[in-house]
Length: 218
Image (cartoon, rainbow, N blue to C red; front, side):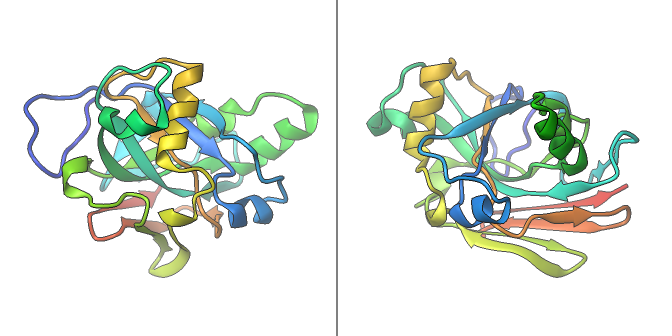
């Protein structure tokens, strides 16, 4: 599976692993009744969960409650390991707006039992993404409005300046844990306002005026 680009690039870029952040906005951590972390909290989603603009989110039979989470996505352009903050932007190819769909009932149940909750994030169609905007076209990715409407009603509305950890800090931290490779996607976490979505809902996400995403819940 390959990325789609808003502007032309020389070659196709395969979607790699999805490295995601939890509790990366203070108000979201508070609404989830979670502690504000002192360093990034990361988890993974499979590339098979990716869908694109105009596609459909499929509600899995195993879940009765799925939530939307709108996020800034960072596409890695060069292989990197143990990168310092000052060099982090050298390894970024571009940005996109994404939805990290969560089976909240499964996640909550597994948390209670002390089990890993990867399954709650990993169903097919649980990572809708927009086209990629190359970094050269974005002046300041750390100051972009990010929003989500469900059936025309504004549900999430924030700015990437409210992220607890900066883009540089996120890349530095992740690259200490694992090698980042071209095509890897970092989902930087969601602001407050997450809520349940139902069959037939239309989701419209925006990242500033640079990219947008529209998907339907099936």
